Length: 223
Image (cartoon, rainbow, N blue to C red):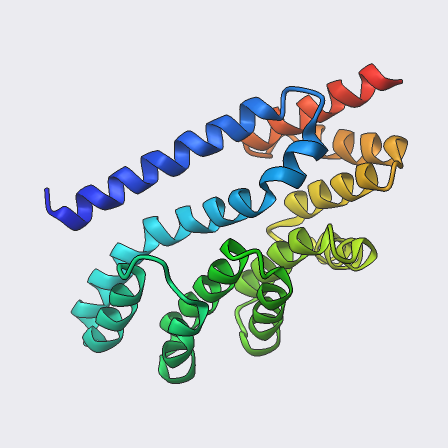
C-alpha cells in the first residue's frame, strides 16, 4: 500500500470515529449544547470525509484524462499541512470543471475550520451563483444553512425551506436543519413535528434515523 493510500485510509478511520462519537452524543439530551461546542468540527469533518474519499480518485482520474497539472496543484495544496483558504484561489480562477468546484468547497471548509463562518458563507454563495449542477448548488445551500443557524436563524430557515419545497436530494437534511432551528428558537412542538415528519420516511439513512429518533425521544421527555 502506498503512503498516500495509507494516509487516506487513516483519515477515513479518524473521520468515521469522530462521526460515531457524534452519533453517541446525540443520544443524550444536550444536542444543542453539543452543536454549539462542536459545530465547526462536525461540518469540517463531514466535508473532510468527502475530500478524503474523492480527492485521491479525482487525482487518478485527472492523470488519466490529461489534467495532471491541476491534479498536482490540488494535491499539493491538500498535503501542505494547515491550508490557507486563499491557497485555492488559483485553482478556482483557472481550474476546469470539477477542479474549480472541488477547490471552492475546500476553500469554504478551510474558512470553517478557522471559524470564519461569514467568509465560508460567501464562498457557498459563490458556488450557488456560479455552478450549474443543481446537486452541488443544493449541497452548498445545505452547508450554508448550517452555518447560518447561529448567525441568522431566519435566513437559515429560508434556505432550508427552499430545499424542502424543491424536493432537493438533500430535502431531509434540510428538514433536520429546520428542526434544529426550531429547537434553538424554543419552538419545541414545531421541532418535534419536523423530526417526526422525517422519521416516518422509510428511505432515510439509518444514521439520520437514529439521530432524529434521539431528538424525538429527548423532546418527548421534556413534555
